[in-house]
Picture 1 (cartoon, rainbow, N blue to C red):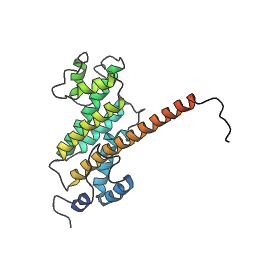
Picture 2 (tube, rainbow, N blue to C red; picture 1 turned 60 degrees about the vertical axis):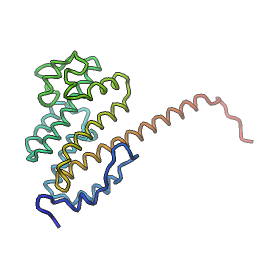
Picture 3 (cartoon, rainbow, N blue to C red; picture 1 turned 120 degrees about the horizontal axis):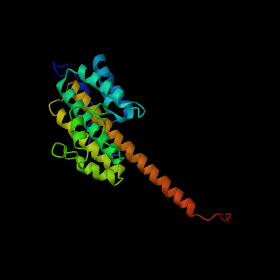
Picture 4 (tube, one colour; picture 1 turned 45 degrees about the vertical axis):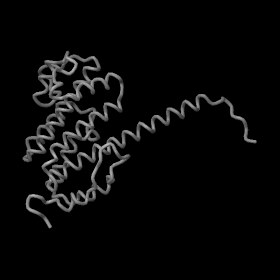
Length: 230
């Protein structure tokens, strides 16, 4: 049965709760989640696809120019008629822009030129104006900038990844509070699933890399010739 204003009651009720960073992997796999999402109306499925391709790092082409990405993101924002999704997308794009500024500055780059299209929203001008300040002068509005800068400077890639995912998770959770069984609820669930899956994959990759390092070290320390078996 479809409730007026809440068309995805059955779908949302079928999805297990996700506890971020407390599990090795999300409680539902990608294939099962995709199967459940077949219940989406075609227009909703297309909008979800566009949202994921804009905010999920695995869809972002590193070779793509910033201007091309911004064009796509701004076109999506212009098409959004759901305030909660528009606000969440704007917040995620702002997060991405501040992180890009941190990485550029850490690499020794000067502030981007005034005419350069590299970031999203009003924060771009404030980042440029506060480039020489540790937190760009944005620490009050974005208290996560200081710890992000510290982990970046310490070379703590995993710590930075976790911090940024925690910030993004909190943003999504705040926007999702007023939505339980509507399309927005589905979107926020899938975005949280994507973040949890990213962390699980990152942790697995890091563990595999560490194992390979230990294996290489053990092989390097082994005798050049091994005795024959008795």
